[in-house]
Image (cartoon, rainbow, N blue to C red; front, side, top):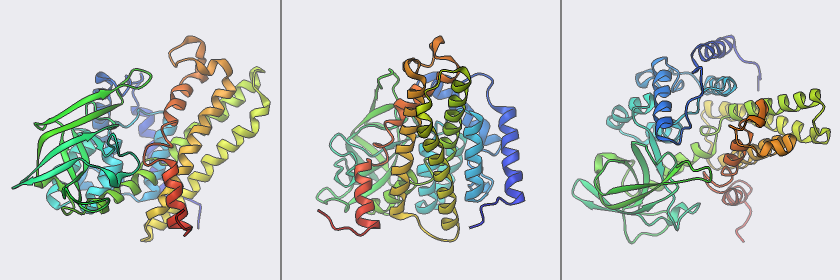
Length: 389
């Protein structure tokens, strides 16, 4: 594998870097999981879209630049390196988007792709249920046919961005007597539909990052069925491959955090306040981010050559989620008591800001996108060929 970027790829990276430096908001946007912050981030999505940076690897017809996976990875690296605002429509553009391209009809492409890329329609994920977490095949929310409509009854929980999102992509059971993977369908549900009630779920910091969604006779037209009726499991597996693989967590996020960690250690050394015994942890976290970067480029080359990711996405998911925890935990150990301060505390100082909130978020990584315990089972059974217990 040639690890050198082409001249065109370097030019693309430089263009991204220049645009971000000139256009990132001068002041941080309000927190995304507040009403005003949600809309501010929606506005940033529109700025990205108008400049052609929202979905660089999508077709031009839907607002993209039709670049390859390597260029997209370079964009992500520059985006996180610049400190640009978080992407409020991650569920849409990185999870549902690729699935829509693969399974959607031409009419669905025309209806959903551009509004998604522009931030006009923000998407939430409606998969987990109170009694169905990582075991997606056990969901019980029902969708019964009534002519051209599906009538939904049931409950979803832990819907990321669900408090204010415009649409929800759901897995529902359209064959009531079916079991496990059979009889499931993939529906696109507008959150203003009659019979849909959503209730925000607050985190420990008080922000409603999630929502519970209740369906009580909620009617969804058959034109919003993604893929064939009863074949929702196959469609969902395409989404999980994006969620666990390189789409949701490209290396740029961790490279930026690793560089910040190294800067923190150097600054504390110069100030004479660093615990030098933590050097190995800093180096291990930084090299872990680099390793994930190059493994992802290897995966991109494999996919560009016509390969598939499949169950191998579980390997990446376990690695990046545990790397994220260790990066932030190492920073907190370096900061000592200052690491326990909230970002707004004056005593947190320049380097203290962001580490505690980042650490709290990182703890969810081994849980969402399928718990790491489940991912290790997948790795053992489907990649290593080990027998079930």
